[in-house]
Structure formats: C-alpha cells, structure tokens
Image 1 (cartoon, rainbow, N blue to C red):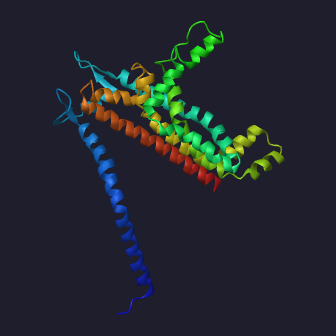
Image 2 (image 1 turned 60 degrees about the horizontal axis):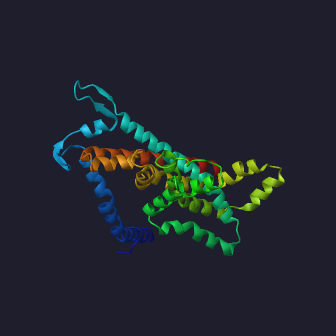
Image 3 (image 1 turned 180 degrees about the horizontal axis):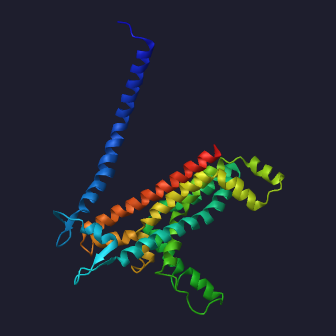
Length: 307
C-alpha cells in the first residue's frame, strides 16, 4: 500500500523524536540518579524523626518542618518564632543580595573594559579573569584572610602610612564575608556581562551622544537595557551560590556569623538532627527556586518589552 507524503513526513518526525529521546537518555538518567534522587532522599528525611545519635528514625513526623521557623517551649509548650533560624535566613539573603550588587558594581565596568579592548588582547584579559577558578575556594578564602586580618596587608599598609594607630578589626564579621564572596563570585558576573557587551552595537551609543544624551542617560537607557540578559544571568550565577555559601562564612565569619549553609551543616554534624537539616535544605532549595523564577520572569518581561 502506498504511503502518502503526509504519512511519510509524520513517520520521519516520530523517528526523529525517538532518536532524540534515545540520545538524551544517558543525560536524563544521570540527572535523575545524581540530581533528583538525592533531593528526594532529603525530602523524605525531612518528614522523619531524628535518631538518638544522628541518622533518622523511620517514623513519620512533621516536627522538623515545624522547627524551621517556629519553636516550642519545653516547659509550657508555648509556640514562638525561631528567632535564630529567621535571623540566619535573613542574614544569608541580605549578604547574597549585597554580594550580587557589589559584583554588578565591580563587574560591569570590568566587562565593559574588556569588551572595548582590541580583539587580539581580549583573550588575555578573559584569561586573567578566569585564573581564580584554577584555585580551590578554600585557598581563596584563606588568601582573603591574609589580606584583611589584623596583621594582614591592608592594616599593615595603613599603619605603615601612618593613617591608623591600631589595626582595624575586619575579620570574623559580615564585612569579611562580603569581601570574600565578592572576590570569589566576581568572575561569574563578569563573564556573562562580557558576552552581552561584546554583542552590543556601539553605533547606538554614538547615536545617543549625537542626540545630546548625557553619559548617565546613555548608560541607563541604552547600554543597560541592551545588556540586561547578561546582567540577569550574572545575577543568578552570583546570588545562588552566595546564598548557599558554606566555606567563606566558615573561614571569614569565624563561626559567629552563620549563613544557611553553616546552619544546615550544624544540624547534620554537632546538632545530630538530620530531619531538621533536611527541612532547612529543602527550604533553601525553595528560596532559590523563587529567586530564579523572579529573575526569569524579569528577563521575559524585558525581552517582551524590547521585542
């Protein structure tokens, strides 16, 4: 029986779809096993009871979720807000937001500088930006510690110039954490911004100047809207790891300025409350998902407004 052209086209299309699924199968299986699987285990643990010496008891319980933001008095069962957890969550979000803003402030001019260099020198500048990725984050955190500690480079230089009489205490504070995270995550902002600025049509900037626009107006009304996709991508790449950062607050915060990652580690370690640690982890994932949805929604709106 003869096959019509439409049926033949449909068969080719279905065969192409099957081939794509088969080619994608190894990656999908890896994502399911290495990504979704551990997350499901964490979600399961969050609904169990804590064991006596760590681990979990296979008994259904919602106490871990209750204790994420609330606490019950052991004497009269009075329910109050878990101030410690809330303050750590708020501090983590604030530090992540400020880190993202600082990375934009320092990353935007850096990316613009690289994008406006001669073509044969841009690769050198990009190479210099990516060099820190060759070093472990722990080593970079200790490097920042050597810069800002009481006997570090900054205080030694200021005292040598006679500008201060005693070292300025900077270690083990939110300031130290901000310095460390900005230094570590800055390349994650520079690279997407550079990719957007590199595609920028600089004739539009010249046209804006010809129409007597000020430098500020050119920046805010021409350059920033055109490089907004790179700005949003860089913000996502910085905000998410900054929010869940563990090593930098541990080294530069000195254990006094905890972030969400340190609180989760504390529950799985010294606290021996795995369900609470799991529920905190899932809460962190939910916060990250909401942040990503916000950024993606902003990106789609900006894309639609320029379309």
